[in-house]
Image (cartoon, helix red, strand yellow):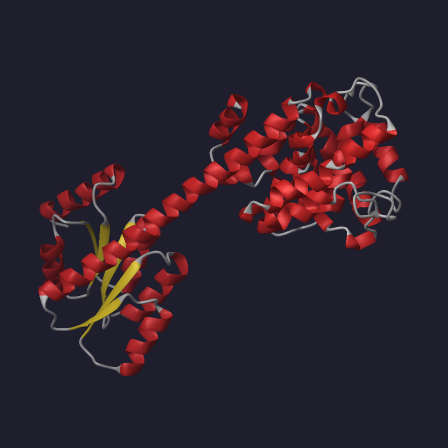
Amino acid sequence: MSACELKESLDVVLNFAQDEKETVLLVDDEENNLQLLRRTFRGKYNLLMAHNGVEALDVVKQYGDKIALIVSDQKMPVMEGTDFLKKVRETNPQIIKILLTGHVDTDILVSAINDCDLFQYILKPFEVEELKIAVENGISKYSMANNNKVFYNELRELFYKTIRAISNALDTKDSYTNGHSLRVTLYSMILAKELGLDDSYMEDIEIAGLLHDIGKIAMPKSILCKNGRLTDEEFCVMKSHTTEGEKIVINIKKLQVISEWVKSHHEKYDGTGYPDGLKGEDIPLPGRIIALADTYDAMTSTRPYRKALSHEYAMSEIKRCAGTQFDPRLTEIFVNLSDKIDDARRNPEEAYQKYSFLVKNIDFKIFSEATQES
């Protein structure tokens, strides 16, 4: 590598850190062509270079998250351009791909467009201005997609922080239930993980857990915070928190899928629950999961009318109610997870970071600060 090329490589690394320019990878086995490409784009983009597909794959492996666009020749030894770009598509589909070819072969071009997700192909010998325009258009497409991704992630972060803030505000409405929603969510996630549910489903269950009691916002504080057992009339009002929760959640497009879960977390396996008297597997799976977690936390938390019950007693009661209040299969699994549940109960904030899918998507410190501010 010449002193000039070494300096350019160092500039690329420095510009990576500063994010001043987009990065373009140039791939051609002929040195004269490679240098022509380098001179064409030098100064406008960060440039990386490789002499064949195998060498270029190593570059992509190292810098793939920084590379915006690849300009690759087709006819190269070791690995042809289309074979190289196919592999790039598998590992880094976001990179824009331009193929240079000296052969007008319809089959190759169709394969390149379909299999490589090719942005454009250019016939050799090419006009420099034509290639410049193609690269500029490709960079614009990459930037737009990247900005949309950033925007989406920012919206996602805002959404989750809002969910957690609402959950936290709900819990602090009653000092006796402070932290209840987080703990119910945590126990639900431990059980759901044991069931092997997919990530998307787990994420929705987590949101449902955090918002399962959102309908209590509509409950009079005199009932919600009553220092004693509720009368029959008061209990009827309290039961409406399930349907009130559904009304709130179903109006948020992103949350419509969980509205039935929020509504059903007080249904019982034998059909004696509320609000709809659903029975067995007619109760949505997340509703059955949250019911177990909710009951366990209610028993192991101090309430106005009694002190917290022991972990062992709560587990024995849950086991006793299998098949009547709870899904017997889920109950067996929940009881078998007794040690994990107990460990989580003792340190819920720390355990939540381990099991949460929301935490994986945003910074937990920011996430926690947002809930504290509420």
